[in-house]
Length: 194
Image 1 (tube, rainbow, N blue to C red):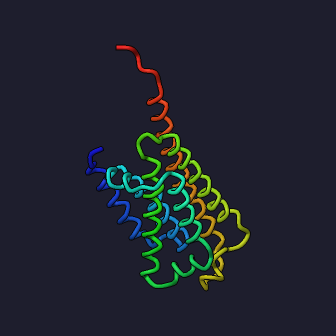
Image 2 (cartoon, one colour):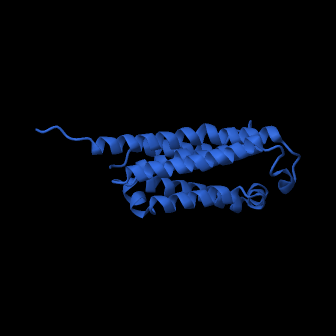
Image 3 (spheres, rainbow, N blue to C red):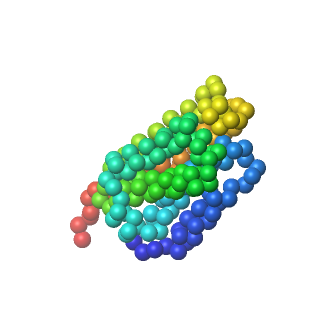
């Protein structure tokens, strides 16, 4: 698959947007928006734009999913989340870079040729655990991070952050999975005789 300049440009713009979010959002939703733009938007665009090196270096689908799961849930443990939000800029940059790398790992693994069904399953599992984390933020009766971050509780911002995860992650992973399944069905359909 050749490099697609429009996709490269779209990925670059998405990354720029992720790095310079508008200050109108409260801190937690903005933080979640950055994460989701990196793992669910920029990562697949980069894999589609540069498939040869990224897919060649990708782990198996299950390992890619585990890397992404460990990254997403690990950085949302209260102590690590607080360190990334209120620590040094280098730590915040490391967090964002790890989200992009984990997103590339799962998408490159899922988009590997000849593994469309496994890729669709991997994206489905990823969608499920992202949905679970988003639901945790929405349904939690208390602010999970306020005490750790030294901020006043803001349940509304936390819920908005969870909704951001659901609004971006579910459609992105669902669309990727459906596309992979449709590709698998096309590849397995009997070909008419010439």
